[in-house]
Image 1 (cartoon, rainbow, N blue to C red):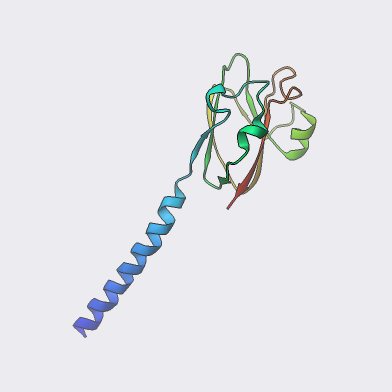
Image 2: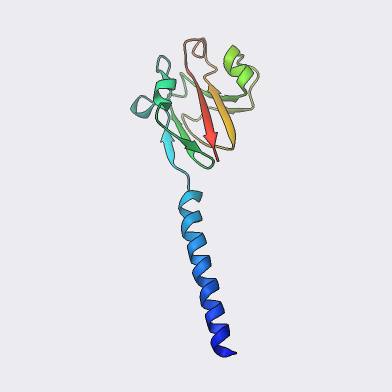
Length: 128
């Protein structure tokens, strides 16, 4: 009985180790600085910035910008397309904002002047 219990415990511990070794590295998301060294500014092609990147649930978007010149509005797809600045879900104004990605898609625009209309907007497809 003692040897069987020991073997059973060892097997359970082994499987727990395997499971956590696969899950834990994926639980911590990657950090992405939006626009890389340019940051969140107008006249940057954010679609090009996204090219080749795969965004997952738990990844973090970091928006760096001059808060006297820009902001970040998290919006839905309709607002993203139309650049309606007064219809947002979240508003960020610190100049160094982090957003954890959730499932589905994420849409962001700048709500200052005509920045959105000039292309300062970002759409992310998020995979599980």
